[in-house]
Image (cartoon, rainbow, N blue to C red; front, side, top):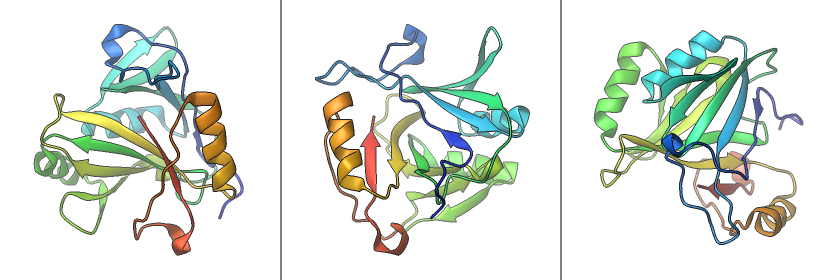
Length: 190
């Protein structure tokens, strides 16, 4: 396992963004995720990737962002040290209302798709090794929605305790086959 966060720096904001962000409702502790920072080698390539996934490019002064229902993804150019796999942020999770159409779009754009255990689950690999988990949810009110940030840490109980205490999260478990070497993984859902 890599000891650094690699190319992804995660900030789950504890403050509300503009109404257009379509953020999820606040939890019992008054917290709602607002944005994620991605430090990337090529902002334009990342914009193309996130647009292909259904995001909408936006700018706020000098900040380049992608709006996806439930979160803003802020793109900052800089040096990267590798992808998300093996870092603390193993992947970002999203669900699509029409997954077959979305997958066809990704394939046409030439992105690598790693199949999961079934047709409704897997991963798409983006520039800089950013890994995005996909799942199908035909009941969504939007075409795409962020579902979780998957964290892989050395001290999962301490991570769960911190998120529970500071951000009002709820501890959970992940029993998926995709856990590296059967290691414990915690997921912070939005």
